Amino acid sequence: MEQRTSVHIKLKEGEATNYMDAFIDKFGGKIYENRLIVESAKNGLQFSYYNFIEEFDLLVAQINFPKEIIVERMPDERPDYYHFNMINQGQIKQNYQDSLKYT
Image 1 (spheres, rainbow, N blue to C red):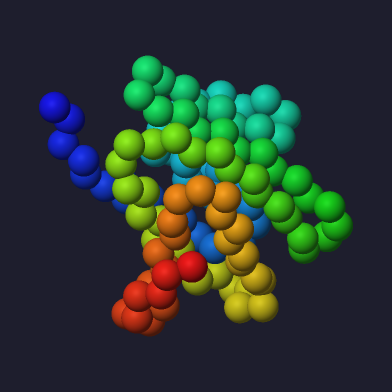
Image 2 (cartoon, rainbow, N blue to C red):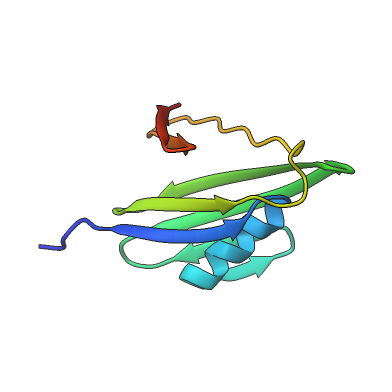
């Protein structure tokens, strides 16, 4: 039986493409225009990236992954860049300055 462990991804905050690049580095996959697709027998990750207007990116993800994914975001030069999470199923835990928050 496969042991459930976590996968750690470290990236620089900012544009949605930073997130896609970090997932490509970790999992590989193929890019089709604005989409990243990673598929294997046990998991699947799909990301679609949209830039509606300058400085407003949308990253839509569908993730079926048996392990916990830990994303460590390193600050960039833009403290006014907002990040929002909207979840249909599952859970996101966020740690702000060593204080765990559930969203």
